[in-house]
Length: 449
Image (cartoon, rainbow, N blue to C red):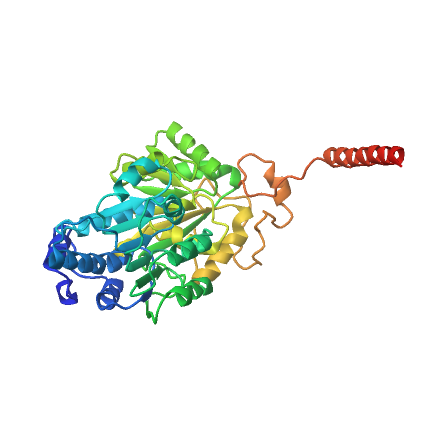
């Protein structure tokens, strides 16, 4: 099958050829004809399968053909809205639309937080065909009446499950309630069809066609999983060892917290690595610059929190390292989805301390496959990694098999250990203060009486 056989316009075929794309991926081959014929679509596909093009190409085709037919010089109102969970994904989708539609007269704008609203306001006042936005910033513009959504006839929800995970359900409902309901085509793309996604689809979609290209929690075939057990206080040294084995290899390193990401970035920088960090406390300019430097090879290591686990398209990324295992097993799938994309080989390394045994067991159960356990010479832990025990080593509040409280105070231990309780003295002081206030009120009341 070719893109031409899908019925795409010559202008789109030319742009795809210039970018070296000749054959559609399975999700593109399945989704594009359905979108071109006007159906609502509920599409499930893992990251790295080309799902952005699956909605971008038919959307550009529809808008591009309409522009040629009408050839109007009147200012145009946006007709398509694409919602994404993160700023990075919004910027990436916007870039893809511009690349695919370079030979069409279709105008797009990206609207997301972390940058000033002034420039976005000016852009929204011009002729536009497509708006790519994050829900929060779009609502800001809606509340200030900066954006006209009265002509939207196509809505795309990209990474819908992620948006719901991030608490965007009320925002999505507010936005969709403000859109025209008649003759609207809605396209929902999601890595998983969790019940919340199904409920959202039932509420806002009309007789959607469903395309599911991968089983839930499936990972790319070309990804090799490797686990290095290590004592928590030797994790940083083991990471240095792993990175130094091929210092030119582009590697995405996941840490659990923003503070931990910054500390790890500083540590790697001190040891001569070209490294940057990306997380929610970084400004949009810092995040954009860090990602751009990583993509063009100016930095070889990018340290990130789970903000980078979904939606980022980093071409030919050879390796992902889980410095900290994610607290939710599903996030492991999203993290390692950054490597092994489009049929390429990829490596997923996890540095696992004793406190993370339970998390690793959860991940293995989710993947339904064994993970290669490979201790590294010189970094062998003082314990044996067990994959057959109950999944209780780490819980949401950091409890493990009775050791979390002790380990939390030791240098190098993960930051998810048990949260320290307030000193007992504070509680006694608080109780004494309440008794004193009660005694004072009793005296005042007795005088009034």
